[in-house]
Image (cartoon, rainbow, N blue to C red; front, side):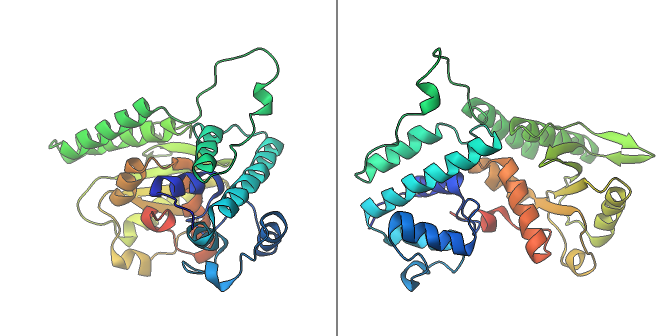
Length: 297
């Protein structure tokens, strides 16, 4: 079996998806075809269903049970597909040092590293453009969140500090955040951009959970906006049980203090976190999915 560490598995998830149940853009049929044709195995064999039936969980099972050479072959083939799709979409690489890190993993598995990036072999040599936030920027976010938790100021001051922290967090991950503003007599705690949609933000730093009335109030602001307006309700204290029983979310996803902590601590791309929450809500009509469930270790 391939000897993959937790860090190795997190890299694979960052590159191809896995823990959320999905792998790149594969359907069930194309996923089976890919493994049969390019890897030479039946990914829908019961042996790979140890973690569940989804594509991502079958990949997870395969990585744990497959032989090192076969796992390396699959990862190399997945990389080729990922690169073709990324170039066709004109997207920049978002995973820091993706090619080098996967090459090191392939070498660890006893296989050859990935070929050199062809785009780097021609033209004048340039300094690489960093992809994603620097470790310094992420460490600074950690410090800001720790300082926020240590504040003993009045609730209003702490609330403003929470809004500033969220804006910094969104900006670090390239979500083009705006600070709080007012519209037609209503206060909006901020906004950001994600997948061509504008998200309005409601931020609550308080010990008690947010109830259904507060969610209804924020949703009313969203429904008054254009169809592409979405909402993120961030409640440090979480959400009450009756808030889910008495509230049907439209255009709205939720995040609590634990989500923030684990996303920061595990250096999760905030854009991926938002995307996973949106997809979970679209598929299951549940606006609050925990980060630890969407991105399990």
